Structures are given as C-alpha cells and as structure tokens.
Image (tube, rainbow, N blue to C red):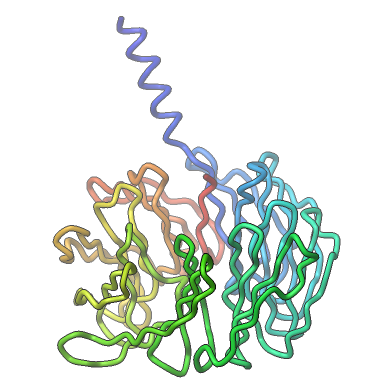
Length: 354
C-alpha cells in the first residue's frame, strides 16, 4: 500500500511538469525550460523584440515564432530544434495558424503572406496598408488595415481570395481579439471597439466609457487583456486601473485600483486570481487580485523589470521573466513565494506548451 502511494505521488509530481519557452530578447534565442531546469537554447531566430511564439494546434510537436525583422521560424518542440526559417518581410506584426497554412500580417511591406506549413510561399495579398489583428476562424482569415480603416476577410478554401471587405470601421485599427465567433477590433484614435459577427457578417461599433465618470476608454492593445469567461480585465492606458468589461454586451463593469500603470493581465486557469505587472516606477512589482471580490490581495516585488508571466496549466505556479535580473522566477500560487530561479539572459515573453 505504501509503495502504491509513493508511486502515485511520484506520478502526480511528474505530471505537474511542463515545458516553458522563454524569449531571450537580446540574443535571438529561445530558452527551453523542462522539469524546472534550462534544457537548451534554440538560436538564430532573428530580432526578438516583441517576438511571438505559437504552438501549432494541429501538430503537437511544432511551434512557430515570428521575429520583429520579418522572419518566421518553424520549431520542433519534441527535440527543441529549429527546422526552418524564412524571411517574409521587414516588419512582421502577427500571424495565425490554419490547418494547412500560416498567415502573416506585416507593417512593411504592406502585405499579408500565406505560407504552407513547411514555410513554402503560397500567396501574397497586397493591401497598401500596415496590417494588424490577424485571426483565424474555420476557413476564414480576418485582419484589419491600420492605414485604411478597413477589415478584410480571406477565404482559405477559395485560394485565399478576399471574401469580404468592411470600410470605415474606425480610426486606425490597432489590434484585435477573436472571442467565440466575434472579431473585436480596437482603435488607436478613438474610444470604440468594432464588433464583427462572423456568422452573420454584421458589423457595428460600441462606445466604451466609464459608467460614472463618463471618461472614454482607449484600449488598443488586446494582447495585454486577461479574459475569464465573458469578463475582460483590461489594463488602462496611463492610469492606475484595471477596467472590467462584460464581453457579452460590452458594458462597463467598473475598475480595480492598482499600484501603478498596468501592462499585462493574466488569469489563472483555475479562475481564482489575476496577476498584473507594471511599467515605469513600479516595473519591479506584480499584483495578485482576487477574481471574485476584485480586490488586490498582494503587491509583490518580484524582480528587476518584470517583463511577462504565465500561469502553469494547473494554476499552481507562475512563471515570470525578470529582465534585469536575467532570470525566470517560478512562484507557488498557494503562498506566492518564489520556489525556483533559472538563469536566462534578457528574458521576455513566456510561453507554455499545452
């Protein structure tokens, strides 16, 4: 009986491990953390300022990384090696993964590029605009044209031809979010969000403002939001607040006062906490906020410039990159005490393999 218990404990502890990929912002490499240790580095990936890594939902052993200088890299996440790299432009902004293709949005040149999964070129769509907010829903690829105030929809089952165009959607689309069958776009020059229903192709704008104060909310950076069910926790631009929006009707539900100017909000998979980091004077801190009561539970001095963080899949750990410490720190979310530090140069984005 004791032997069985010991085996079960070992199994449960082993099951808790996950592979974590961390962008090394200055070196052009990605660090691979496995079993809480630095396993290896995957290098020669380009300029990794604001780089994004995505795991292929159709192939568990593949991931793609886009660099700021226009490279897309195919990474084998089973052996953690670079399989292939291709330059598709001078300034790649975002990409989305389809079953058989990759679609990449660029600032420069003004194109959306379609690649086969092995990075062979398939098509280039000229837009005469910087392109942002690229998302996939089934057969469709949806993106926004920053300089033309438009949304385009491509049909992957019809040679990636332009299926629909929406004009005058708002002033300077900047980022987008796909929630269920709704494409939500934010704007840099106005306090609205655009809402495109991908079932009916109906488009409308919603004006966001604080209920009591009537102050318009300008929230262009969707990648920094924390979403729990139908609630979005949104870091304010230049204010000590996390705004709360009900995504079912885009009504304003209040705000949470926080320590400084928030940057990223992350929601625990368990749904009990959100964590936020800051820019400026409070960049060394994170705050832990309870989702139910929406109150700050802890302010933690976590490292020298906290860049990014992610919860483990079970919500029991928080992986956090401390840029000037050159470390990734792992916190126990039951105690909010650090349990491990891993030396990684200039760590930035943290990505956890599903």
